[in-house]
Length: 607
Image (tube, rainbow, N blue to C red; front, side):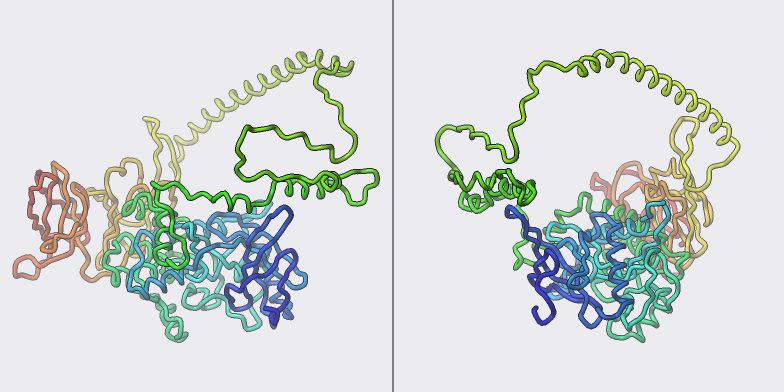
């Protein structure tokens, strides 16, 4: 390490190198303070040959400025920045591994990443990115922060199950005026959005594309865009014709396919508009397939994948392990901590002041064992560290000024109460007038998409505009709502799934909760020459639709299920064959000729 520079930067001692990137190296470091205080951090320092380039130095400083504005549990926090003896950035130390390392370990073991884990990691990373994208300055102006380098290497997984996006070194922000140069690549081509690869202006949707690539790779467990073939990578980005992850992982649902493919749309104007929308959709799927999946489950996955690191968690029914008495005695003494604080509180070389340290020199402290038998004896009070004793105010006679203040207090409280009453009365009057005017205006003006109003029963009514990548038809259960773009009222849809159908495309199934609060909801439909049929199964008792002959679950009934097409008889007509297995055990076969662009309605009876 000495060949690379000093082993100490400011108040931090470098312990080991963790890794390096295009223009910087990252170290595990430690800051040691008074009274046994220790804090482990990560320090980023520039590679020596780049420290002489003014533009790169400014970019390094810009990274520090941008990170200082961000504060979110899904982002690696920056805690300090220094320039002597060289520029360095101090960040929180995340005990864990990058997502890339986890994926590589699973590939080596011949394992797939659990779909629930992929959804959780993607949703957490999306939350951190959304915080950065929506950040504003002190005047309320958007900063326009874009990460521009979202990749599995920059998504850190802690041994406690936390997900944190790191390395905003290539960030684009309003206060970062550094231009690309000096031969340093801006981002990884295999995770770049098409507009970024073509050096066009980028916004938050570029990070949405990169996050989509990361999620695709977690689900498919393979590389989407080759890392070692720039020509092929550029060609794929120019076309953006990707297979859905379910092609390589059949357990991926059509709904999850649609979420990922919407992120990977070439045109930013039809791409999923925000990281927040990506996170909401992923959490909806996660709640459906693995309710309650969170940090504990991810931490257990990491403990299983990396047994050599000792990250295994205690089981929920076990009490956390406690230190032995010998380990307790190794902790810093409270008296040592008090002495350190006394030294810090007294100005140096102040004449006539006897400090606590001086007293300790004359009367050495005797430390009791960690567990001492016998009765508890109260400790003697510490001698005054500074100056003469201050007389107690308890029991002293009140002064004349105090008597006057106490006699005037009731009058003062009465005046304050009267003023407060007037303010409340005026506020109530203004509120009544405002509501009456607002009611008149709302009656004359229809609500815009995404707004909430009150119906006659007082319930909230929300409208959302559904837009699609190709012209499509929208259904709520068996009810046809209309063609896209379509404004729908979400209230009243809670009991039925929303189905979006287009010729030659895979059906998209949405839960109404995904539409609540969204002004615009974009659905990217996945091309499919022979898509599944959307079937609404009427039934008088609950059950499950199963494919024939494999018996795979298609979903609960009554309700909408997606059924793979099959040939009816020996003709050219395609339709659906499946069974409905009721909870009572009764099985009802169902056969119907279904139009791929309409929701087919069948009656399965009851169990």
